[in-house]
Image (cartoon, rainbow, N blue to C red):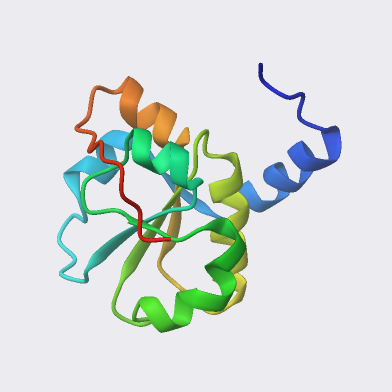
Length: 131
């Protein structure tokens, strides 16, 4: 059963959306256009969601550790970063926070992993997770 989203939460998402670039699933699957910088897909969903399916090559960093671990895990200047959540709402908020932390090439996956799966794009299913 889906929880009702509070108006305040939706307003926070809407405010962040004005500052954050979103990419759709097909754009992400195609990869960066002509830019040779590495692409990092960061999945912020919980371990059970990750284990039930994720984007190949994605890295799971739990939402609770993201701000603390991000600078140590991904080169700031030379990477494109796409944040993936379940529906694309939390990823917008996280992308906004990372932008404020100084990351300059951050985007949110529009519609999240749900949109990726709905587009029929490849999904990796396993029972292990890094965090």
